[in-house]
Length: 258
Image (cartoon, rainbow, N blue to C red; front, top):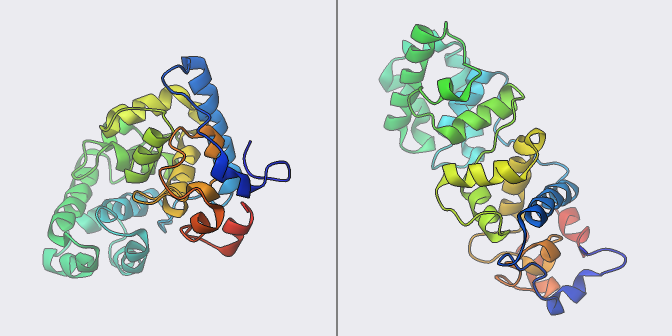
C-alpha cells in the first residue's frame, strides 16, 4: 500500500521490499507492471512530453536535437529553427554553417546538422516531404533510432510506442520488469507487460518519475509512493524527510506523498 491515510509515509523506513522477483510468476509481474503504470499516473498526472512542437516534423527535429542535451535547452533553440525551416525541403536545402550556428547550443551541433539535413533530404526524396507514420520507415531516416521513432509515433501520431531513454531503462530494471540493458530488449520486455494503449503514457510517466524521484545515484525511496511495488526499495534514503529533500519538482509533489 502506498503512503496515504491508512499508511503514512513515515512508516516506510521500516518497510522491507515487498517484491521477490526471483519467485514472481509472469502473471504476477504483468499485474504489478500495470499497477505501477496506474500509480505513476496518480503521482504524475501532469506527465507529458517536455519538448515543444506543433507538428510531426518539428517533433522529429526536436527529438534528434535532444540527444545529449536537456529538453529545456532544446526548447530554447527550436523556436528560431522552426521559424527558419518550415518544411522538409527547407532542411534539405539548409546552409550548413547557418544551421550549425543555430544548433550549436544543443551540443554535437555538426553531427545534428548532418542528421537534420539528411532527414530533410530523405523525407523530400522518399516520403513526399511528410514524416512517415511507421516505425520501420522512421528508423531509415538519418539519426533516427527506435527511441526517436517511438517518441514521434506516440506524440505526433497517437500510435502507441515505448520510449526507452536512460530514465525508462533505469526504472524498468529497478522495478524488476527487465534484466536487460539493451534498449531494444528493454522495450520488448515492457511491451509484453504493459497494455499497448498505455505504452506512450507509461513512458512519459516513467521519465517524470525518473527525473523527480528515482534518480540514478540517490533515489528518493522514502518519498516514493511505489515503494511497495519496487524490489529496489532502499537503494536511496528511506527516511521520509531525508528522501523528500531529493525530490525534484513542485512542493505539491512532495506534500502529496507525505
